[in-house]
Image (cartoon, rainbow, N blue to C red):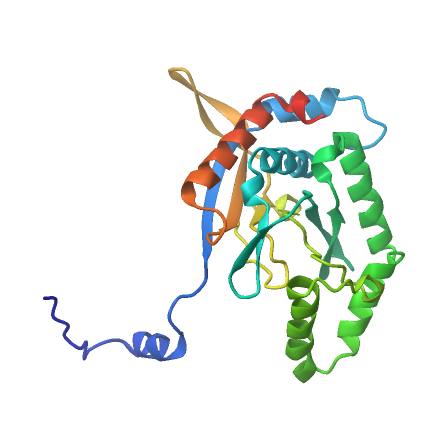
Length: 267
């Protein structure tokens, strides 16, 4: 039988921490993987397109295609424990607004059914409208929350979560459609010079994964029995462990790696 002895000489911070935090209940798991970005960068330079295609667009497209091969990952938890699977793959791409002072995003429905150009066009058009203040959904949701007193923000957010996620009430007219964040969130942080980062889930999101796209940087890369310097993209992910376990995350990561090795398959 294991015996336990009280720690009498614990530091003041340890005493405070033990009293301040509750038992762990966060189901998030984190992981990162390095991808040789050489094929992707070559593809972006040579791909004929009427618009600019970025690494973030490639990641969003790859996430949608990889999820299509593992449909069991495209799920959400409702009613305090019931797992339900979505029938469409909708990818939410975050967008910085107001000079990087605020965040919004574009939910691209049926992202796996769109070509790379169609996906990039949808993201760019929605992002442009949001930044110019022309997106009705963004304006309504931000206007509502800016007018709320601080003490109402939490109950209103919790009520919104209940309506759009638990009851699937469409509040699109108020800037909150049903299942507002979809199957996965893709966030680019490379423009800030960040090469590794993780992000927490937004409780309102109810999506099983959040992928961060950092800056591509030169790193040592093993090529056979020699080491070369290659441009490397370090993809960082947060997964909901209630839906995705380590084995499923590993298969998902392997598929992303294969897609980035032959990026023409993303077109």
